[in-house]
Image 1 (cartoon, rainbow, N blue to C red):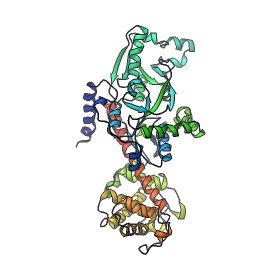
Image 2: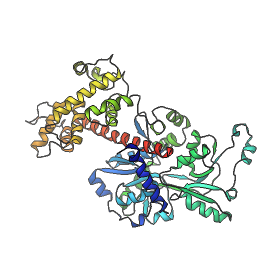
Image 3: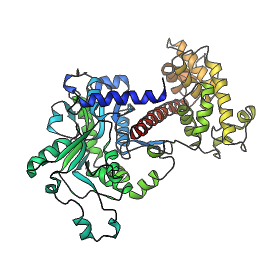
Image 4: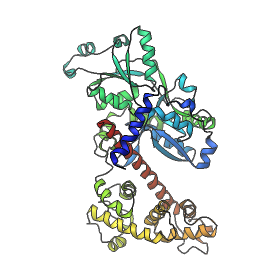
Length: 486
């Protein structure tokens, strides 16, 4: 399919869908409610979170996933010993449909608790208390104005919104607040709505760039966005305090209870205060991230080697983001990195292996990548006869890249001996994970002895998890850029 149609078609469908929708979560009342509580989630060994791709919730910086809600989710998932799977939200108008149908177990999207929403979903204890504020533009010469003159040049009271046009997403909590405010001030506020793909941050940017005059935002987000757009004013409050929380399915009581018990305790800790400060109070840290060329939210780049990875990854039939994740794990994209035992370069070759594939410490980044491609091809060829599935084989190749194929072959033989599947990584990985235990490394089928297999097991999982972050975020980034150009 043509790349343009691949992205444009879902947007057109969403736009048509939103024309017929008037409530948050589309018509989620008609969506069958899946029963999947904490017990079922633990059986699947992963917590699936629907999360906003934004400067505060979830993004990539220098190849590393970050964000307030992402890090908070990560800490909770670790607390209950589950893998965290992240799905970026593409359309807020369908987010509750996706929650109810089981595409996600939790929504982390700076959601306000409202009575209407509580009729259909659960909310956790509040994560943040905030207010709704008007986003308006300061006059062009605002830096030269006195405080009094600047104040007189901007709206100062909700009464001033009479007959003004304010742009918000219809399914947001801002839409009913504006309708109520219109009644409260006894005058019409012209409320214009946008589709669910349009983020709060995008609307604020449109105000800053003079594309629209007014929108509404949560104060915690508005203050951060003001660091990027100092010509916006966020001082006018239009609501009382409001609770921001995570959403769960209405029948996920044990999951909600588990989150609440952990959250109430964690919010009292120094770590929570540090996390909040990192994303909502540390202007210098924020500016350092957003000005970096590898802040993916704005640049769309993971590293300085993206083009080389896109060029060479097809030679092994890998997504370039997967190769990028491997390189991040090995060297954090530093071709001059020297590791334990003399490993070197982007791909961290040991000297003997590097010599075999034609590279040393003086080799260029591209030469290092090419050598890495050759080595991956070599490993792939080794595993293709016993691990025919391409996706499964990638994990065997990664494990071999880290610890050498001998220990992985041992784990495969152990899996076969104990009647597990030697072609499935989850089964083989179990024995590699436990290969430091006497029972396994002294087994008759083992030829390579003791191994700290937990290191390699973690290595594979981290690369695959990061690859999912890279793949999801870059797809979301491409979609966002396309929407802005339509």
